[in-house]
Length: 335
Ligand SMILES: [Zn+2]
Image 1 (cartoon, helix red, strand yellow):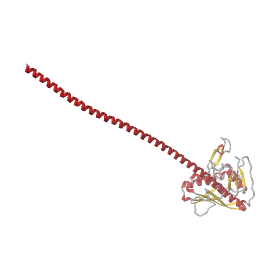
Image 2: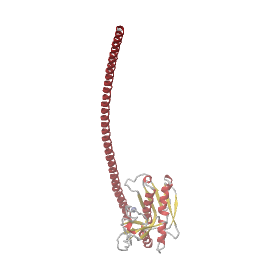
Image 3: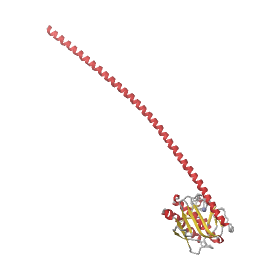
Image 4: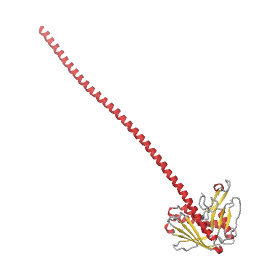
């Protein structure tokens, strides 16, 4: 019995010892776990703080980037503003320069006309309401149906499109109708007819009886020599006085008769086909004997200011007067 008790006691002691060992091991494990968990916590905390730091850095970077973008936008905007300012200044400069050039051109042409006009009679003036006039001076003296040969010199240097535009200003018989209000000639709803080319305008003028034959037949020739009745010389250089177009006529002053007209167009490379067409239309008016108009909207105004630089009924009237009287005159437009 006592043996059994002893055995039981020793068993219990062993059990307790084992429990104790287990508890120690558990405590040890728990302690280790705590350390691990503390380490993990510290690590997590560290990571969180690192993340905070990163976030803050990202935020700061973002702010810097934003302010940089704003700055760049402002730069771009001010660059754009500068760019537009430069364009505007250039436009103003070009306008001023071309304005004064045209004015010079006008004076030079007028001077040329004036040199020879001293011996001419004072001519006549048709008066009317508006008071705008077109000067006429000398004219062609042709036999009926006579052809005027137009020689485009250096045509082979330029595109077909440009040459076509030059020819169109002379040969076209196209008529367009434009509302009078657009040219300050009358109320809205009233229209006037305009010619795109001189052949059409001259044929219309021919319907009126005139003392001298109005030229209506033009034939183009191409030669480097100066043959032809009217020469149109195309040049690539910029005229030193800034002219884009120039016309002078060789005249028999005693008869007010044109013997030959010479047109020069400068800086042709820089001119668009449309600009060439408009300038040719103006210069060809001189080649036929017209001087300048006092009406700013007129094709024959010294500077081409009109949005509609076509041959007007008034230009046609000026041709009729010129080829009827054949002397220096002023034709006043009816509208
Ligand atoms: Zn002119």
